[in-house]
Length: 407
Image (spheres, one colour):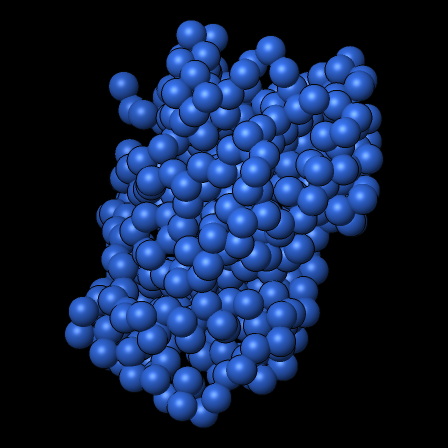
């Protein structure tokens, strides 16, 4: 039995049949994904789950990772922050070194796919090899919030993006003036992964006990990389506003990524802010912690994602899939996942986040209704089967842009 067949009970057998029919049209084609890290972050997580499913469909999906050093990833982290609208320095020396590392990777990661699928800014310069890559089609996939990019960084990247056949963004607000096709494809979660599959109460209790959590008292949780754009310090401040009124616990759980040099500094700042409160649990988790994250989300009475900027925020979809009430920043792709006061809560401030934490902890029936509505919204719109279908149709459209495909 194909692994895809396991999803039929969740999304319906007709959706699986549709994927099989589309997959036949791409059988034998090589789709080469290239990004900057094999572990940590949503891109690596999506590719880890998606590559085997594409292969089940007969698509020769591959995944390569570029090499970079501390200086390169410091530059690309600054680029990442600048693209999110945070003022950063981006010097001519930074640009030159970025080009140098990308050109050096042309010998490490040779673009050989029928379709070369580049993820995020770090490997964007590989498109310089395009003229020597035969008849390959090239796609640039942007996973980050492009609402207010720093102009000089945008101009630098735009020179590369224009050389691609298409650019893929996660939300309509991220679209930019470009001479190439732009496509909206939102990310997804895998409902059968260890991070999202059903767990028994014994499994949840066991992991909570390991971390010292008391399930008899309310638990408020944010799961995310330790990144200042996820605003973990703001989460601690919101919790401190709630604590005098409700005896709750706060969990800040996550890790870093190999291409993110700022994680340790953010983690240290969070630990300083949380010092002295035994009910704040700051958990720096290793990459293979999917079951722990699953259990922590399921044990939570409220899940937060208080991002200041956000490409999409898959932790929102993860928590909603588990029928948890979610309070999240109204930024990036998060409003695609949450309809305010129906499938979750959108917040704009620390004070607003604290207000809604108190409301949901004091009104469990309303919180449960938000969770139910949120789960159904994720089932209909943000599972991996929908994501695969849209990628397959994009791949087909590159070869036949004016043709109606008969499935």
